[in-house]
Length: 535
Image (cartoon, rainbow, N blue to C red; front, side, top):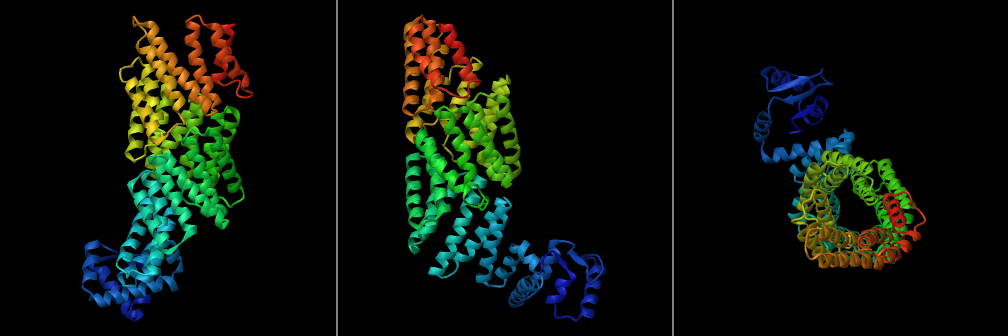
């Protein structure tokens, strides 16, 4: 009744036996081998020999008697053993459920779900919260039931995100139901949080214009009520989606405002993902894209440190994953590998499906850069497939580009153009434009490599040049100075080969001279060397 393992003191508190009668009865059960005793009464604990024995004893009681004892046990935990009610609320929830007391059962199932989520025990949290929703479904349809269901759905959403990924179908269903409930009772503050949850889903699945619009709605609701934490959530989602849309200047503005809001609020209140970490990590990528590689590195390190200090596994897994992007951008494979390796280990330990796939693919690219080509390509494939299996479409063009670039280094060009064209289709479909410049640049590289021995050299080089020019135009439209530099170098190498050095200098010199930091990065070092050759 109490459980497979129970304490002498607990049993004495709910039993109608006298102390002497209880001791005799327990002695007989121990001697028969049905239960085991550990310690000496009244400090002893007992364990049933087998769950079948426990079940047989339980089923021998009348239903009304069982309910009576479940109710007494639940109250016993609350009144005499509050530490159990605090640390094992699911145990109290179970007894109130079996006692037929849904009001108290719901309170403890919700408490158990939130407590499990705080420990990153997301499967456990989902189980507790789902049990509560099952009980709720059997109650009359009242305003109170709607309020309670909304509490459960909003606690369930972050657990599904952590365990299954932002693009999981369960995330959409949970937050869509929560939106219905908010609108039914006119709950504007929680509607802002629900829209943020749906925004997370569309950020993973696309289109990102839809996610951005939802974040704008959430920001309006939050600002109308002057709620800084909701404004932080909305600013974070606006910044992330502006980044994905390739609107780097807009993204940086939102992310900077998000970091300011996060700095003014207590850290670590969320047990899923800290938005201060999110804003800092994405700000690093926007800073790099805008042409500030050193500031980007410092911002990335700050985000990872904050995540470590908060001791939130999900935030740390995210910070390491995004941090590995920054090192990929800066072409620092050793640092990228270190972040990716740590991320893979953490994600396996915590069962973070989405970030595990991403960290695996990132580790694969770092291995490619360090010369482990076959192993790296295999890791990229496995990671990309695991990422997509969560339902996420975000960053698919990036992973397709990684795989193409890796195989290009191995002389495998056959599927490269098809893969890049697939990435460009996804780019248009979802407006996933944060890596668009590189897709066009790589297409030019692949055209030259695949058709290097072609007789129609002029046509091939013209096609490659068109891809480079397209990359340059996209970079300029996005104010993406770092990507513009990289695209310019690819074009300049082709122009130099064609004895068009003056034209090449005119392309590369202005963008190189724009930079005021990061002069020791690989891109700027190579650009400097190219300019010397051209002169």
